Length: 561
Image (cartoon, rainbow, N blue to C red):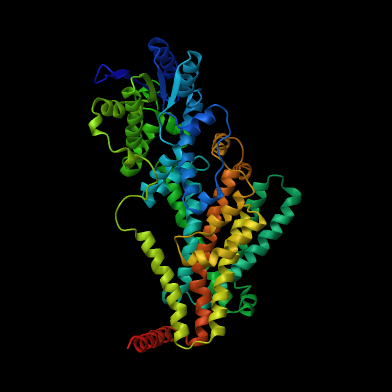
């Protein structure tokens, strides 16, 4: 503890008390400091929303319109990550996170002392924190949260499936040059058909004799893969069926299967390697490194943010340094008004705040600490890419039209784009638990949002969901409780998480966007070449686009000449 002395006799004085947000000792320090000093004001590191939640009030719901402005869901993920780590530390040390702030408020109220909320609004802080992080940093942050649900092997498997979905279409596009013949793809597709049939049959029989659902699923998968590899790929027992379906089916199913198999294999290898290297340590194993007595030197969030400085200095500045300056501004106003203040803040903020109080001229301008942040300077590559993709999509149709391609062909091509995007986006949204009206909206706008990466169908799906379902920050506490349950099977635990409105909203938004992304990739690789055959294949499309460009240039020249 220390005092930041007043610069003149007319000013008040500020005593800064640094605490650990999960330390029982900190609670006693806070109570003793307030009772000993009897200040005019007790300032606490809380904003209005967190203070109301601490008082038992219901937090504000997410506004549907906020979701359409983007990043709202991702900011909740960042907030959830920070909250999860703090709650697990509180659970380990048997104290409620934030008990120090609650003790400060209650002690002040008991003594009739005013309470000042001096922290920046948490939504502003998280928005600025998220905006300043790079893409890889965001992935690592969300991955850290996922370790609360699974281990490195589970994450590796999930990542492998994602990579496989992207790798499959690429194999379909470049497969012939890599030696993926139609015969091989036919064998693989036949193996998939036999594997599905055998798996369904085994699962049906196992329902009557095996009690554990995981064992039934494992048996069905094992037998299905064995039958598919031996009977389909090895012996070609289903070649006739696949041939009757046509080469297009063999190309799509075969290349996607190879992509998924390769992605899953690599993902599992990476996951097992990461687990052996210790990257899959559970939260409890990581918390063993903390000494509760040492936490008085740095509060939980600050400890975590100091680690973030190694890979996201800009994000750490938004979460720590800017808040130091913001709180210092608030405390200076109280001091200049002549108040004697005891300020209760996380220990990680104490040094920075006291430095500013001792040298107010070093404070950054107030305006630089408030409002939203676009992520800093530099070239907005994502926006530039979005504009280029949108222009390319419009140019593709415009040039074909200028080349004299029939309107009927262009309408069928657009209809196929609309349907493929809509089916995948709506299907995955519904799979994630979206309402039927939300599912329909996501499917209807998927074609448009896939053209412009700056938009996302998930925002619109989530917008409709929020018109019917209340979602607020209190859901994070429920999710933390579920993640702390280490006895419930994963399948049951995930089902319970989907019952929490915030988690279901996050998954609906994410799955809708993933569906649209997959659909765009599949359309470009599998569907577009089918249409291209009507106008001379890829070479014919290129020739027509060049012809359309010449016709457009001639029309423009005649117009201005």
